[in-house]
Length: 67
Image 1: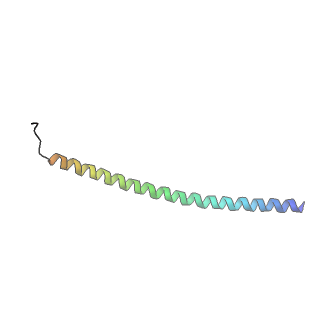
Image 2: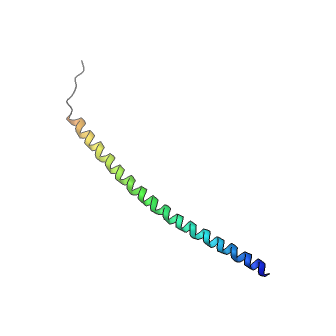
């Protein structure tokens, strides 16, 4: 009986260790997602700015006539 209780206690300890590890990994992944979302927003802003600048440059080009 004592042996089965010891075995059960070890399994509970293993489960708690795995749960803690997964909790830590989950927090790390949440931080990574937040970082990537911020980077995505910054890159989208740069793309928008670049598109606006290219459109402004395009509008400054002289019209080309067909030969």
